[in-house]
Image 1 (cartoon, rainbow, N blue to C red):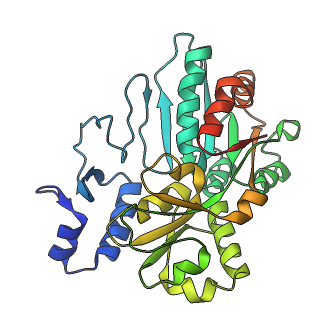
Image 2: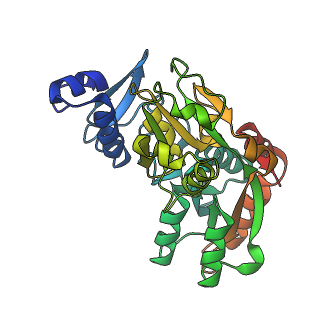
Length: 314
Protein backbone atom coordinates (compact mmCIF):
# COMPACT_ATOMS: atom_id res chain seq x y z
CA UNK A 1 0.00 0.00 0.00
CA UNK A 2 2.97 2.33 0.52
CA UNK A 3 3.68 1.90 -3.21
CA UNK A 4 0.17 2.12 -4.64
CA UNK A 5 -3.49 1.51 -3.85
CA UNK A 6 -4.91 -2.02 -4.17
CA UNK A 7 -8.22 -3.83 -4.08
CA UNK A 8 -8.92 -6.42 -1.41
CA UNK A 9 -8.62 -9.19 -3.99
CA UNK A 10 -5.23 -7.94 -5.23
CA UNK A 11 -3.88 -7.75 -1.69
CA UNK A 12 -5.14 -11.25 -0.90
CA UNK A 13 -3.45 -12.64 -4.02
CA UNK A 14 -0.18 -10.85 -3.27
CA UNK A 15 -0.13 -12.00 0.36
CA UNK A 16 -1.34 -15.52 -0.34
CA UNK A 17 -4.22 -15.11 2.13
CA UNK A 18 -7.98 -15.47 1.84
CA UNK A 19 -10.06 -12.43 0.94
CA UNK A 20 -11.97 -12.88 4.21
CA UNK A 21 -8.82 -12.72 6.32
CA UNK A 22 -7.40 -9.73 4.45
CA UNK A 23 -10.75 -7.92 4.72
CA UNK A 24 -10.77 -8.53 8.46
CA UNK A 25 -7.25 -7.11 8.87
CA UNK A 26 -8.00 -4.11 6.67
CA UNK A 27 -11.12 -3.30 8.69
CA UNK A 28 -9.01 -3.19 11.85
CA UNK A 29 -6.38 -0.99 10.16
CA UNK A 30 -9.16 1.26 8.89
CA UNK A 31 -10.63 1.60 12.38
CA UNK A 32 -7.24 2.95 13.53
CA UNK A 33 -6.96 5.35 10.55
CA UNK A 34 -3.93 3.49 9.19
CA UNK A 35 -5.61 2.85 5.83
CA UNK A 36 -8.43 4.53 3.91
CA UNK A 37 -10.81 3.07 1.36
CA UNK A 38 -13.02 4.03 -1.54
CA UNK A 39 -15.50 2.13 -3.67
CA UNK A 40 -14.79 1.54 -7.36
CA UNK A 41 -17.75 -0.27 -8.89
CA UNK A 42 -18.09 -3.50 -6.91
CA UNK A 43 -14.55 -3.31 -5.52
CA UNK A 44 -13.19 -1.69 -2.37
CA UNK A 45 -9.86 0.04 -3.03
CA UNK A 46 -7.45 0.60 -0.12
CA UNK A 47 -4.58 3.06 0.21
CA UNK A 48 -2.51 4.80 2.86
CA UNK A 49 -3.63 8.27 4.02
CA UNK A 50 -1.10 10.98 3.22
CA UNK A 51 0.40 12.70 6.24
CA UNK A 52 -1.18 16.04 5.34
CA UNK A 53 -4.03 14.81 3.19
CA UNK A 54 -7.49 16.31 3.63
CA UNK A 55 -10.00 13.53 2.90
CA UNK A 56 -12.44 14.10 0.07
CA UNK A 57 -16.17 14.53 0.83
CA UNK A 58 -16.89 11.12 -0.74
CA UNK A 59 -14.35 9.28 1.42
CA UNK A 60 -16.40 7.50 4.07
CA UNK A 61 -13.31 5.93 5.67
CA UNK A 62 -12.35 9.30 7.12
CA UNK A 63 -15.83 10.68 6.75
CA UNK A 64 -15.18 14.36 6.02
CA UNK A 65 -18.21 16.11 4.58
CA UNK A 66 -18.61 19.43 2.84
CA UNK A 67 -19.45 22.60 4.70
CA UNK A 68 -18.74 23.19 8.33
CA UNK A 69 -19.53 19.71 9.63
CA UNK A 70 -16.08 18.19 9.20
CA UNK A 71 -15.77 14.68 10.56
CA UNK A 72 -12.29 13.49 11.47
CA UNK A 73 -13.40 9.91 11.84
CA UNK A 74 -11.65 6.72 12.80
CA UNK A 75 -14.74 4.85 11.60
CA UNK A 76 -15.53 4.14 14.39
CA UNK A 77 -14.35 5.35 17.80
CA UNK A 78 -13.55 8.89 16.80
CA UNK A 79 -14.46 12.52 17.15
CA UNK A 80 -16.83 14.22 14.74
CA UNK A 81 -16.48 17.94 15.08
CA UNK A 82 -18.29 20.95 13.71
CA UNK A 83 -16.34 24.06 12.81
CA UNK A 84 -16.18 26.56 15.71
CA UNK A 85 -19.38 28.50 16.18
CA UNK A 86 -19.41 32.27 16.08
CA UNK A 87 -20.77 32.37 19.62
CA UNK A 88 -18.01 30.12 20.93
CA UNK A 89 -20.57 27.81 22.56
CA UNK A 90 -20.03 24.07 22.19
CA UNK A 91 -21.00 20.69 23.59
CA UNK A 92 -19.32 17.27 23.53
CA UNK A 93 -21.58 14.26 22.96
CA UNK A 94 -20.54 10.61 23.32
CA UNK A 95 -22.83 8.46 21.18
CA UNK A 96 -23.10 4.78 20.29
CA UNK A 97 -22.12 4.08 16.69
CA UNK A 98 -25.73 3.09 15.98
CA UNK A 99 -26.43 6.83 15.95
CA UNK A 100 -23.52 7.69 13.63
CA UNK A 101 -25.40 8.91 10.57
CA UNK A 102 -28.44 10.24 12.41
CA UNK A 103 -26.39 12.30 14.87
CA UNK A 104 -24.19 13.68 12.11
CA UNK A 105 -27.24 15.10 10.38
CA UNK A 106 -28.80 16.20 13.66
CA UNK A 107 -25.56 17.93 14.67
CA UNK A 108 -25.49 19.93 11.46
CA UNK A 109 -29.12 20.93 11.78
CA UNK A 110 -28.69 21.81 15.46
CA UNK A 111 -25.74 24.11 14.79
CA UNK A 112 -27.57 25.83 11.95
CA UNK A 113 -30.52 26.39 14.28
CA UNK A 114 -28.69 27.42 17.46
CA UNK A 115 -25.10 28.33 16.54
CA UNK A 116 -23.85 25.83 19.15
CA UNK A 117 -20.89 23.69 18.07
CA UNK A 118 -21.30 19.92 18.49
CA UNK A 119 -18.40 17.52 19.02
CA UNK A 120 -19.54 13.92 18.51
CA UNK A 121 -17.46 10.98 19.74
CA UNK A 122 -18.66 7.60 18.44
CA UNK A 123 -17.94 4.04 19.50
CA UNK A 124 -19.54 1.04 21.16
CA UNK A 125 -21.59 1.93 24.24
CA UNK A 126 -19.36 -0.16 26.50
CA UNK A 127 -16.11 1.33 25.19
CA UNK A 128 -17.46 4.87 25.53
CA UNK A 129 -18.59 4.15 29.09
CA UNK A 130 -15.05 3.07 29.96
CA UNK A 131 -13.76 6.37 28.60
CA UNK A 132 -16.23 8.19 30.83
CA UNK A 133 -15.12 6.18 33.86
CA UNK A 134 -11.51 7.01 32.99
CA UNK A 135 -12.29 10.72 33.28
CA UNK A 136 -13.26 11.84 29.76
CA UNK A 137 -14.87 15.30 29.67
CA UNK A 138 -18.24 15.47 27.95
CA UNK A 139 -21.73 16.89 28.30
CA UNK A 140 -24.08 14.19 27.06
CA UNK A 141 -23.97 10.39 26.67
CA UNK A 142 -26.29 8.61 24.20
CA UNK A 143 -26.23 4.85 24.64
CA UNK A 144 -27.65 2.02 22.55
CA UNK A 145 -28.65 0.33 25.82
CA UNK A 146 -30.31 1.68 28.98
CA UNK A 147 -28.09 -0.70 30.95
CA UNK A 148 -24.96 1.31 30.15
CA UNK A 149 -26.60 4.54 31.33
CA UNK A 150 -27.80 2.78 34.49
CA UNK A 151 -24.25 1.59 35.13
CA UNK A 152 -22.93 5.15 34.84
CA UNK A 153 -25.74 6.34 37.10
CA UNK A 154 -24.74 3.87 39.81
CA UNK A 155 -21.23 5.27 39.62
CA UNK A 156 -22.57 8.83 39.99
CA UNK A 157 -21.26 9.81 36.56
CA UNK A 158 -24.57 11.10 35.16
CA UNK A 159 -27.38 13.26 36.48
CA UNK A 160 -30.09 10.79 37.45
CA UNK A 161 -32.91 13.23 36.82
CA UNK A 162 -31.75 13.72 33.20
CA UNK A 163 -31.93 10.05 32.16
CA UNK A 164 -34.46 9.55 29.39
CA UNK A 165 -35.36 7.17 26.58
CA UNK A 166 -35.23 9.14 23.36
CA UNK A 167 -35.57 6.54 20.57
CA UNK A 168 -36.05 2.88 19.77
CA UNK A 169 -34.33 0.83 17.09
CA UNK A 170 -34.17 -2.55 15.38
CA UNK A 171 -31.64 -5.18 14.41
CA UNK A 172 -31.34 -6.15 10.78
CA UNK A 173 -29.59 -8.76 8.67
CA UNK A 174 -27.64 -6.74 6.10
CA UNK A 175 -25.85 -7.92 2.97
CA UNK A 176 -24.63 -6.45 -0.28
CA UNK A 177 -27.11 -6.30 -3.17
CA UNK A 178 -25.10 -8.82 -5.20
CA UNK A 179 -24.90 -11.38 -2.38
CA UNK A 180 -25.93 -14.81 -3.64
CA UNK A 181 -27.73 -15.95 -0.47
CA UNK A 182 -31.47 -15.51 -0.11
CA UNK A 183 -32.05 -14.24 3.42
CA UNK A 184 -35.54 -14.14 4.88
CA UNK A 185 -34.83 -15.24 8.46
CA UNK A 186 -32.00 -16.19 10.81
CA UNK A 187 -32.09 -19.85 9.75
CA UNK A 188 -31.02 -18.78 6.26
CA UNK A 189 -27.63 -17.76 7.71
CA UNK A 190 -26.75 -21.47 7.81
CA UNK A 191 -26.67 -21.47 4.01
CA UNK A 192 -23.25 -22.39 2.53
CA UNK A 193 -23.51 -19.22 0.46
CA UNK A 194 -23.05 -17.24 3.69
CA UNK A 195 -19.34 -17.46 4.48
CA UNK A 196 -19.22 -15.03 7.40
CA UNK A 197 -21.70 -13.52 9.83
CA UNK A 198 -20.45 -10.31 11.42
CA UNK A 199 -21.74 -8.97 14.73
CA UNK A 200 -20.46 -6.27 17.05
CA UNK A 201 -18.43 -7.48 20.01
CA UNK A 202 -21.11 -8.60 22.51
CA UNK A 203 -18.83 -7.71 25.42
CA UNK A 204 -19.08 -4.01 24.64
CA UNK A 205 -21.82 -3.40 22.05
CA UNK A 206 -25.52 -3.90 22.86
CA UNK A 207 -26.30 -4.82 19.24
CA UNK A 208 -23.81 -7.68 19.43
CA UNK A 209 -25.12 -8.91 22.77
CA UNK A 210 -28.66 -8.89 21.39
CA UNK A 211 -27.55 -10.74 18.26
CA UNK A 212 -25.96 -13.49 20.34
CA UNK A 213 -29.02 -13.70 22.57
CA UNK A 214 -31.27 -14.01 19.52
CA UNK A 215 -29.11 -16.69 17.87
CA UNK A 216 -29.13 -18.72 21.09
CA UNK A 217 -32.89 -18.33 21.41
CA UNK A 218 -33.33 -19.76 17.91
CA UNK A 219 -30.86 -22.58 18.61
CA UNK A 220 -28.47 -21.31 15.92
CA UNK A 221 -25.54 -19.95 17.91
CA UNK A 222 -23.39 -23.09 18.09
CA UNK A 223 -23.97 -23.91 14.43
CA UNK A 224 -23.02 -20.38 13.36
CA UNK A 225 -20.04 -19.94 15.68
CA UNK A 226 -17.49 -21.02 13.02
CA UNK A 227 -18.83 -18.26 10.76
CA UNK A 228 -18.93 -15.47 13.34
CA UNK A 229 -16.63 -12.46 13.08
CA UNK A 230 -16.59 -9.73 15.73
CA UNK A 231 -16.31 -6.02 14.99
CA UNK A 232 -15.75 -3.19 17.45
CA UNK A 233 -19.26 -1.76 17.12
CA UNK A 234 -22.50 -1.80 15.13
CA UNK A 235 -21.28 0.47 12.34
CA UNK A 236 -18.07 -1.47 11.83
CA UNK A 237 -20.08 -4.71 11.56
CA UNK A 238 -21.69 -3.35 8.40
CA UNK A 239 -18.26 -2.29 7.11
CA UNK A 240 -16.85 -5.78 7.64
CA UNK A 241 -19.73 -7.26 5.63
CA UNK A 242 -19.45 -4.64 2.88
CA UNK A 243 -16.51 -6.38 1.19
CA UNK A 244 -16.02 -9.07 -1.40
CA UNK A 245 -15.98 -11.97 1.07
CA UNK A 246 -19.68 -12.96 0.96
CA UNK A 247 -20.24 -11.82 4.51
CA UNK A 248 -23.47 -10.75 6.19
CA UNK A 249 -23.94 -8.50 9.21
CA UNK A 250 -26.46 -8.64 12.03
CA UNK A 251 -26.39 -5.05 13.20
CA UNK A 252 -28.39 -1.91 13.92
CA UNK A 253 -30.81 -0.95 11.16
CA UNK A 254 -29.93 2.71 11.75
CA UNK A 255 -26.41 2.25 10.37
CA UNK A 256 -27.54 0.31 7.29
CA UNK A 257 -30.75 2.16 6.39
CA UNK A 258 -28.91 4.75 4.29
CA UNK A 259 -26.36 2.39 2.72
CA UNK A 260 -26.57 0.40 -0.48
CA UNK A 261 -27.52 -3.16 0.32
CA UNK A 262 -30.39 -5.37 1.40
CA UNK A 263 -31.98 -5.34 4.85
CA UNK A 264 -34.07 -8.00 6.54
CA UNK A 265 -35.29 -6.42 9.77
CA UNK A 266 -35.69 -9.07 12.43
CA UNK A 267 -39.36 -9.40 13.44
CA UNK A 268 -38.55 -9.63 17.16
CA UNK A 269 -37.51 -5.98 17.10
CA UNK A 270 -40.52 -4.84 15.15
CA UNK A 271 -42.58 -6.07 18.10
CA UNK A 272 -40.16 -5.05 20.87
CA UNK A 273 -37.74 -2.38 19.60
CA UNK A 274 -34.41 -1.74 21.30
CA UNK A 275 -34.59 1.13 23.76
CA UNK A 276 -31.96 3.86 23.49
CA UNK A 277 -31.23 6.19 26.40
CA UNK A 278 -29.26 9.37 27.06
CA UNK A 279 -28.22 11.39 30.08
CA UNK A 280 -26.36 14.54 31.02
CA UNK A 281 -23.04 14.05 32.73
CA UNK A 282 -22.76 15.14 36.35
CA UNK A 283 -19.72 17.27 35.44
CA UNK A 284 -21.07 18.54 32.10
CA UNK A 285 -19.25 21.76 31.14
CA UNK A 286 -22.26 23.09 29.19
CA UNK A 287 -25.42 21.50 30.61
CA UNK A 288 -27.85 24.10 29.27
CA UNK A 289 -26.56 23.77 25.72
CA UNK A 290 -26.59 19.96 26.02
CA UNK A 291 -30.19 20.09 27.20
CA UNK A 292 -30.99 22.13 24.11
CA UNK A 293 -29.60 19.34 21.93
CA UNK A 294 -31.72 16.77 23.80
CA UNK A 295 -34.80 18.90 23.22
CA UNK A 296 -33.86 19.31 19.57
CA UNK A 297 -33.77 15.53 19.10
CA UNK A 298 -37.21 15.11 20.62
CA UNK A 299 -39.16 17.43 18.34
CA UNK A 300 -39.32 19.07 14.94
CA UNK A 301 -36.31 18.70 12.67
CA UNK A 302 -34.33 16.53 15.11
CA UNK A 303 -37.19 14.10 15.55
CA UNK A 304 -37.63 13.89 11.76
CA UNK A 305 -33.93 13.09 11.30
CA UNK A 306 -34.10 10.20 13.79
CA UNK A 307 -37.17 8.81 12.03
CA UNK A 308 -35.42 9.13 8.67
CA UNK A 309 -32.78 6.66 9.89
CA UNK A 310 -35.31 4.11 11.05
CA UNK A 311 -35.65 5.05 14.72
CA UNK A 312 -38.96 5.10 16.52
CA UNK A 313 -38.95 8.37 18.45
CA UNK A 314 -40.13 8.31 22.05
